[in-house]
Image (cartoon, each protein chain N blue to C red):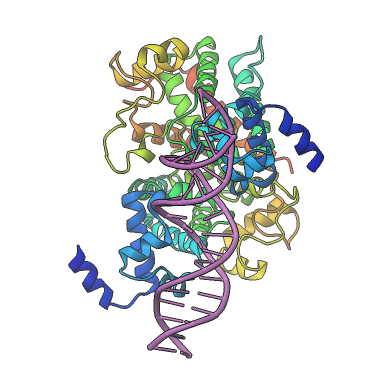
Length: 235
Length: 235
DNA sequence: ACCTGAACACCGTTCAAGT
DNA sequence: ACCTGAACACCGTTCAAGT
C-alpha cells in the first residue's frame, strides 16, 4: 500500500485520476470519508494540489456523478419503448448499487449535471420514438421521477447501508421484534409475509430486486395504458 | 430581536423548545445553517447546554423529523381506501413543502424514526381495512416508496431550492436556453410544452402539484386494478 | 510562475476545571 | 452536583510566503 502510493505519486495528477480516486474512496468508505484531505492523502498529495483539477468540493462531487452516470448502459437498439426504458432503468439501478452514495449525492445537489441531463434527454427520445406525444412524455418523466435513474425510493433502505458489509444490518430498524409488533402491527404483519419467518422484522427478507421491478412495471403498465388511449392533459 | 432573545433566555430550555427552534432554523436557513452552535445562539444558550436535551446532532435531527411528521393530518374517516390514501399523501406533501429540508434529512438517516413507522403502519392499516391482502399491501408500500410521505422525487427539484425566495430560481439548470436546446433537444421540447412559452427552459413552468397528482394517481389507479384482480405474487 | 504550508473560519463533541 | 469554557480532532478554503 505504501509502495503503491509511492508509485502513484510519480504519475502526475489529472482530473481523471482525482475523480476516479474520489469515486473509489466514496465506494469504500461512504460519503463520510470523502473529504478533500482524505482524498489528497489517498493520492499521496497535499490537499491544495486537488484545487488545480477541481474548483471546489461541490464541483468534485459533480465530477464524480458524471463518472458514475457514464457507467449506465446505452439504450438497447431495435426494441420497443417499454423494453428499452425498462432495461435502461435496470442498468441504472445496477450502477447505483455499485455506488450506494450516488443517489444521495444527486439529490443533495441543486442542479442536475450535464450527464444526468443527457441521460434524461435520451430517455425522452426513446419515448418520442415510441410514438409518445410531447405532452404525455413530459408527464411520464415526472411520474417516473428519480426512479428513471434506478433510485429505489425506499424508506427502509437496506441497500444503502449494506454498502460495506453486504449483509443485512445486525440491528432491527426499531427496538426488538416483540415491541415492534405491538407498536406497528400492520408493518409487522407485512414483514412476516415478506420473510416467511415469524421471527423477522421489517426491512429484512424483502427481495429488493422484486420490489423494484414490481414498482417499475406498475408504472410502465399504467403508462402503456395511457399511451394506447392517446391520453392528453387538458391543457 | 435582542430583546426577544433576552426574554427567551429566562424561560428554561426543554427538549420541546430545542426541537422547535431547530425546525424554525432549518426552515429559514436550510440544512446548512443548522449547526449546534447556531441553534444554541438562537436560543441564547451556550452550545453544550443543548446536550442535556438531545444526545447528539443525529438525535436532534431525528427529533426534528418527529415534530414535522406530527404535522401530517390523521387519515380521513369514513372514506374508501383510495381516497383516504390519496388525501393523506397530499397532506404529507403540504407538510414537506413547509419544511423543504426534511425529505433529505429523512433519506440521509439509516433508520426510520418511530413517527415515520407509525405513519407507514397507519397507511398499511388503511389498505388492509380496504380489503388488501397482506401480500399486495406489502408490495404496494414498496411501489409507493417515499412518495407515501409526499416526496416529489423530481430530479429537477424546483421546490427544494425555492425555499427562501419562493420564486423560481433566476439561473436555468444548465447554460443558456439556446445551448440547452442544442444539447438536450428532447428535454427542450418538453419544457416548451410545459411552459406555453418558447423562451423557457426545463424546470421552469412545470405545475408541480399537477405532476405530483398525475404520478400519484397513475400509481393508485394501477394499484386499484391489481386489487380488483385479486393480484398475488407467486410466492 | 508555480507550489504549498500555515492560517482562517467553521464543525461536533469531550473533558476537566470552576462554581 | 451542576454547568461551561477551553480544547480536541476534524472540515473546506484562502492566502501569502517560499521556491
